[in-house]
Image (tube, rainbow, N blue to C red; front, top):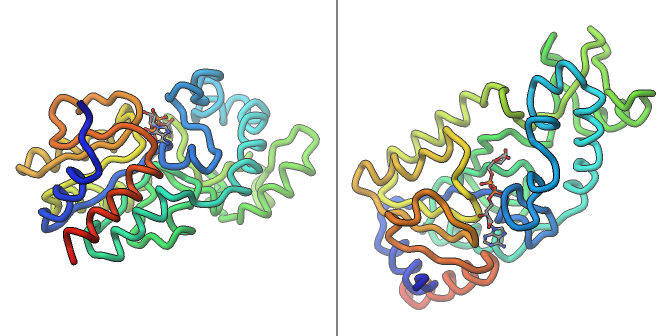
Length: 253
Ligand code: APR
């Protein structure tokens, strides 16, 4: 029997330093498909064909054929009640650091603070050869004006990509370090909308549990941590988290 928002509120209110880890399930209610859920992107296309560094380096046209439409899809979306609820929990001091695997920047748009983007973000791009930075806007103009749809660096003509981390690409060291530092300080972690399938981020709950901390999971699908979670909710994040904020206000006031 799944837990309730009241159970989650009690766990969070009883923690001294709770952090949050989110995944693509946070943004499906904003219209962005997740990856491994029932209508997930990876149910339709093989990530190893379109979202890994090998493809980017050997077949940048194929890479950009997949990524260019996603930029438009990700640019026109707004935060949903789940994002708002997480920001409200931070405002109440109930949640501290927010580690997100999402690159859509919807947490920041919803007013969240201390957001750690461990899989990069769409906000910029960089030439991997000469490290020239480029804005997303410039990247899109270049992609749309290139015959093969591949934006190239002004300085060295190398194919460009956005700041979204690909499979096989090094993760941003500062962000991964910040995420693990946050887990080392936490006595509770709330996971929302992640299948917890992708390391090293999927190890964060184990870091908190290893220190005797508590684990709460709110994800429609299964995760490898379900059997050891202290609180396990299912259902839509927007509804469950909004009800959790209401329950927190009743507990804290
Ligand atoms: N409310 C709650 N849970 C939801 C909702 C929702 N509205 N929508 C989807 N989910 C659940 C799905 O059932 C699934 O269990 O969220 C989970 C999303 O899991 P994934 O699609 O695997 O997303 P994520 O865990 O973020 O993937 C991690 O994999 O492909 C890479 O880099 C990509 O950052 C991504 C990483």
